[in-house]
Length: 327
Ligand code: TXA
Ligand code: MG
Image 1 (tube, helix red, strand yellow):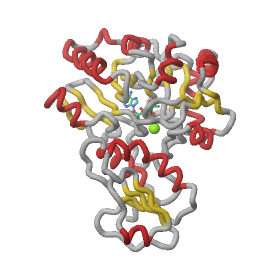
Image 2 (cartoon, protein in one colour; image 1 turned 120 degrees about the horizontal axis):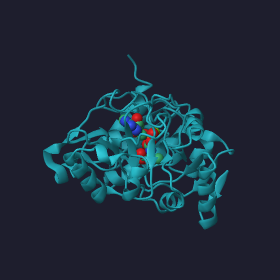
Image 3 (tube, protein in one colour; image 1 turned 135 degrees about the vertical axis):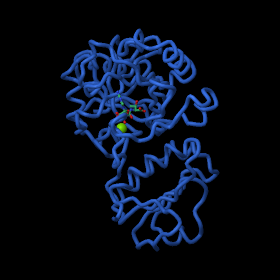
Image 4 (spheres, protein in one colour; image 1 turned 45 degrees about the horizontal axis):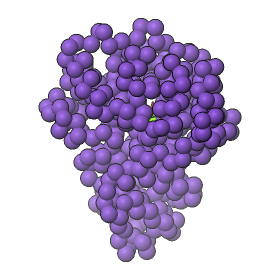
């Protein structure tokens, strides 16, 4: 059931979380499927609802940077790691950055999938922030979508995935529209998942301490090859492409569609005609959800450059298309 996110709605969501229930809630990136991280049954319910294997850890959300210790143990960080943590937190929190930190010893292991690190994030979104401000435990929350499927950036998309049983705080459309950047600070700053906070931005502030940590399944178990996928076959147009059938869609990530494309495809969506990739990122999931409902034969995507937030956009599209790659 979709709950209006007024004061009463926010209090209700906080109360449900306190009672071990699972709640859908908006953040600036995508909707989360949250539960009390210290309530094992609630955490297991998240995995079950999402149909996510328990080997893939959950991020803990807290109201502010000084609440990171609700989930993490900062006392075991080295001086250098603590310095990176403090600089990252002061620069990017609240906001779309998830920092991997040593887990508190009393945090249930199911949250971190048995690992020693926990992802911590302080959302910027007012509703998420107000909800988290009402409680004194971290909220474990993956993105509010079924395992490997498209992330949700509207309450209705969360309801579509999980049904009307789930309480979902309605925050309208998420304005960032793409997931947080995940970094670890073990040895410098490694980007494990690209996201709204870009490599370029981190590099500008931290120089060569920043690395793209790659998509090593061992270091970030969520980096499955197939992820974020619609039901309709998705294909990235890399130079050569076939003439579409009568019933195909095209998403142009950046810039406008050509006359030929407008003629060839039954539906064409341009995410940012003026070529602003931040705008494209904010519209990507919504566009994929919309085209996925049209029973198209396939969806082609005209890619963008992998610089700035383009790296996160192309990472998501590559995984979304992986399902449908021909050998
Ligand atoms: O923007 C976001 O991050 C959203 C909103 C709801 O906050 N959340 C989100 O969660 O995208 P999820 O679970 O769908 O993706 C989190 C990613 C996964 O790839 C996961 O494997 C990785 O972060 N991750 C989380 N905890 C980790 C840990 N302890 N060690 C390594 N990777 C971790
Ligand atoms: Mg996800």
